[in-house]
Image (tube, rainbow, N blue to C red; front, top):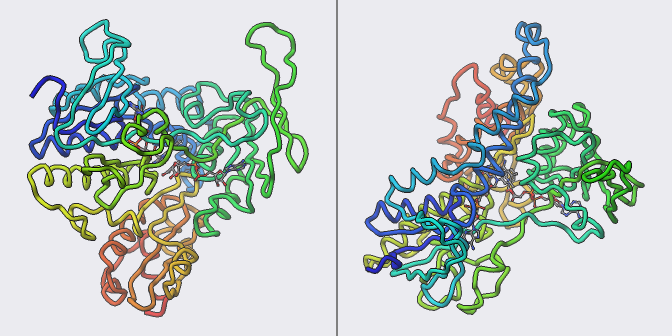
Amino acid sequence: MTDNTYDVIVIGGGAVGEVLAERVVKRGLSAAIVESELLGGECSYWACMPSKALLRSGEALRAAKNVKGASSAVTGELDVPAVFERRDSFTKNWDDSSQREWADGAGITVLKGRARLDGPKRVVVRLNDGGDGAGDNGGEERTLEARHAVAACVGSLPRIPDIPGLREIRPWTSRDATSAREAPRRLAVIGAGPVGSELAQAWNDLGSEVTLLVSGDRMLPSLEPFAGEYVAKAHTEAGIDIRTNITVQSVTRLAGTGGGEGDEGPLSIKTDQGEIVVDQILAATGRAPSTGELGLESIGLEPGTWLDVDDSCRVSGVEGGWLYSAGDTNHRALFTHQGKYQARIAGDAIAARAKGEHAAPVAWSPYAATADHGAVPAVVFTDPEVATVGLTEQAAIDQGITVRVAEYDIGNVAGASLYVDGYSGHAKLVVDQERLVPVGFTAVGPGAGDLLHAATIAIVGEVPLDRLWHAVPAYPTVSEVWLRLLETYGM
Ligand SMILES: Cc1cc2nc3c(=O)[nH]c(=O)nc-3n(C[C@H](O)[C@H](O)[C@H](O)COP(=O)(O)OP(=O)(O)OC[C@H]3O[C@@H](n4cnc5c(N)ncnc54)[C@H](O)[C@@H]3O)c2cc1C
Ligand SMILES: NC(=O)c1ccc[n+]([C@@H]2O[C@H](COP(=O)([O-])OP(=O)(O)OC[C@H]3O[C@@H](n4cnc5c(N)ncnc54)[C@H](O)[C@@H]3O)[C@@H](O)[C@H]2O)c1
């Protein structure tokens, strides 16, 4: 083996690429990760971790204010500089040295630089300065060869819609909105998916006047309708101005006050409901593929597209089957936990195939990311939280499943009323009436995220309702909603 040959080359050292590399090394293969920015990727530095850190303090404050006896002890306001300081501690001030140490300990080679494919199993890396840990070699190109596999785990990019003027004013993306150190006085958030819903709340808590621009008739449109309704009610009560069924037509920057460099005027947003003037705009309008400069053309694939994979995360249409993709890049389920699951599956498949084993992606085997199809759990960390797994009622109907649903107001459960005074929340179970197993679960309410794993187990395990009936929730916990849902269903 030359220095530049590895069993597996992972392009992209986000959470997903790290797990894939670790998995193959644990199974006896050598691995290199090529990462152009920070090892740990989006989730650690500009997504999950900083956004949840920005949200948590406000949520904790409200939680205390909503419990009689504790509320009288809470007299102050949110300490905004301390919230930023706490967020910065989670991102380690955007320093990845602890991740580099982890990779060293795990026996993974890390090269810092931008990688592109250059034909089968070949990767060309343009090194960052000191990208191989050996000093001044910025811009130098190094060619790596993979003995068994290359895994493209390059994540995704914020998608900025084609609204005239929007790109020119350089709106905040999720990166800015998770790393900023000052709250804009007036912030417009375009899009009410998970990013827009969470970050509208975070910046409202941190002091901005937030206007949330929703193109459809509700927030969180891909979830059960009641989820968005609960979050919208809480957001409105917290002072967020939500405009539904709105079309943003154009954006322009107005003249500043003439105070010199850096004195930028406010932003004017033209909409079909009139003009809105703000100081900053967050484009929370989805994600785009980050494969534009990955060299896909060198292996006959279309640059700038999501990579289509089979259940073992092997990319379709690549001769020899040596290219894999896990995480956001394959567009199956854009969540850290699900990308890491795919990385474990892909890593095991690569290692097995390297040993000459067949490793067929048979459903629910170690070589198939089967849960991606109908059992993806997710929590939107708004206050109240929204916890979902599996199919919504509508998605189940669309798949031709005969469904019956059970719904319950979580506030009626003893554990919920103890948890928070006036607990407001709702849960829904979607049941496949032919197989009599749950296929979907949604809960909205304070702390709802911790109700989720029970639902995930029931759906992945295809646990029949008559057996689920014997899974008794402890009294008095919020999870007693499970009993109530089954009773409502008719058990
Ligand atoms: C604001 C926000 C909040 C979120 N919150 C959550 C949450 O709470 N829970 C959750 O599960 N998910 C959350 N997500 C989604 C989650 O962040 C992503 O699903 C996850 O980061 C995907 O991981 P990844 O490893 O696939 O991609 P990334 O983390 O994007 O990693 C890809 C890496 O590849 C590198 N790279 C790209 N191209 C190249 C190249 N050519 N050469 C070398 N390196 C390259 C990049 O620098 C990057 O480090 C959130 C997303 C956003 C935007
Ligand atoms: N807690 C979590 O797990 C979490 C948190 C944040 C993000 N994420 C992940 O990150 C990904 C990106 O999240 P997101 O919220 O950016 O994407 P998204 O695609 O879920 O939502 C984007 C929203 O923007 C709207 N939109 C698009 N163009 C618009 C326009 N011109 N005007 C008004 N609205 C417009 C869309 O209708 C959509 O509702 C998601 O796939 C999600 O899975 C997860």
